[in-house]
Image: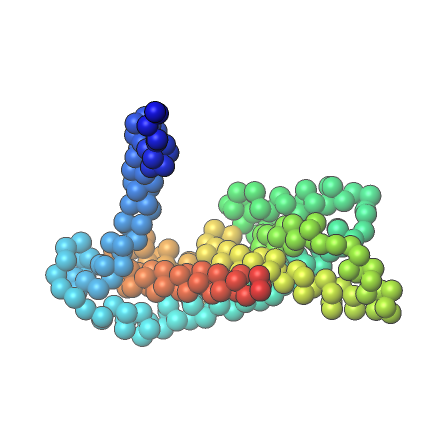
Length: 274
């Protein structure tokens, strides 16, 4: 009589495959250590009492308090929030409307238009910054909040447009047709039928635009004034002077805010699936 083979031995992995899985697991662990160990060290040293921030001397919350008391940092943070909020709003409007027009209507040079829209997404930032500076100088525009917002919107709205276009390709065109058959105008059908279906894409594109605007430094360097300097510009200037423990505390706060944004986005994604 043949000996029955148990289910555990039947699906046992070969030794070579086990070795490969172990190697991939070790490689994945090294990648995570490489990515997150510097961040962990940065957060830990944000509680260090040492001003040089090289050797651990003791635990303190002092640097976090100094961040909130620094008027330059708070003013730069306010500038960044103003620029990012206005940029996100403009990018969502331009990107959503532009994606809908390119999807709904056929233009003679639609492919060329889409290519030109995608150029700011891949163009080197220093080239964009210099070209925008030349453009504003040619128009005799004084550098300030307006030039920074226009510059940020230039490279942010294509991300919204691409996200909305991807969502539009999956929509049933009969939805708009049904709304118009029931008496809705094209604008009303777009606002009441299409926009709710595009909400996840609009939200993801808006979050991307907000993140890119808050993080931008090179384009902002060429298009801002002293009064409209954003937080990344100030942090860059402080880092060039030398090690400052406040930068560790500020970075830790940004990491916390990033984690909160990720969790909030995941919560909205789950709500959109219900």
